[in-house]
Amino acid sequence: MYHILRIILYKLWVVSALTLFSSVIVFWFYGFLTAFAIFIIGITGILYSAQDLLLYYPNDPPDSRVFVLQPSNYKLPYESIKISNKDGFKIHMFLIKQNTNSNHRPTLIFFHGNAGNMGQRLANVSGFYHKLNLNILMVEYRGYGLSEGAPSERGLYVDAQSALDYIIQRSDIDRSKIIVFGRSLGGAVAIDLVSRLEYRNKIWALIVENTFTSIPDMAQIILKWKCLSWLPQICHKNKYMSLKKIGSILTPTLVMCGSNDALVPPAMAQELYMRCGAICKKLVVLPGGGHDDTWTCRDYYSSIQQFLINVPPIPEDIITFFDNVTKDSTNRNTIVHTV
Image (cartoon, rainbow, N blue to C red; front, side, top):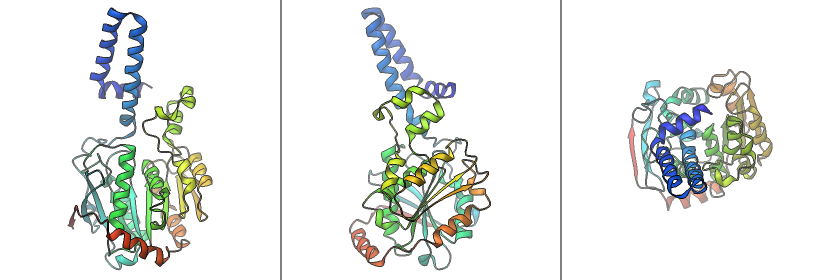
C-alpha cells in the first residue's frame, strides 16, 4: 500500500496537490459535503489515471528508453526494423533469422513483459535461436525502448496486430509456422491477438509463460483489498481479460509457468489451460521457476520443442488465401537496417 501511494504521489504530485487545494477552497465557501464530494471525485480520477503507472514500467531501469541492447551482443544476425502501426506511431522491432534455411524454420513473435525493453530479453531469445532453431521477431510496444507513443491496453493490442501484419507479408519466412509467444503482460497481449477472428488461422501455435487471468484478478492478489471483488469492471482502466478470451482460442496452445512464481500465482496458468478452447493444448509447470527466470529452468526449451513437434502446419490453402488478402494491405512505412 505504501509503495503504491508513493508512486502516485511522486508521479502525480501536482494533480494531487491541486485536488487537495481545491477541496479546501470549496470547503471554505460551500461547506463540508460539497468539499468532500469534490475530494472524492478528484481522488477517483487520480487513482484511475495512476493505474497506468502501476502497470507499465518502460523506464525500469532508468536508461531503458534510450538504450536497447542489440542482438549483435549475443552474436545473433538481425534486422533492426521500424514500422508504422495503425495509430501512426513508429514501433521498433528486431528480426533475428537463422543463417540457413530461414524460410523453412518456424518464426516466433516475442512479446515481453511490463518493464524495460526487448533488449533485456536477448539471453532468452538466444536460446530460442540456438536450441530451437527458430526465427524470432522481437516487438517493442509503444512507449517502450525506441518505440514512439505511450503504453495502453488498446495500444499494445494494436502494436501486436501491426507486428503480425508485418511478418506475414514477408516472403523469406514460412507463413504456415508462425508462433506467438508472450511472457507475463506479453502473454495477455498474445492471447488477445490469437483470440481475434481475423488472425486465428494465421497463427500456428501460441505459447504463454507466467501470465495472468486478468488485471482485476491480479489487483485483488497484490493489493489484498476485499472491496476490489465487488468493484465494477469499468473502474479498471486496464483489464486484459485473458481468461475470458482464451476460451475462444482454437490455436494449439502451450501454457507455461514456474512453480515458484511469487508474482503471478501458478494456479492462474491452470485456469488458463482449463479454459483454453484448443483441442491441442498443454500445461507445463517448471519446478523452481520464478516469474522472471523460468526460462533458465532445465527443461524449459525441451518442453517447448516437444510441444511444437506435435503441432501440424496450417493448411496451404488457408495460407494462400491470407497471402492474397495481406498483399492488399501491406504497410509501406517500414524502415529496415540489416546487421
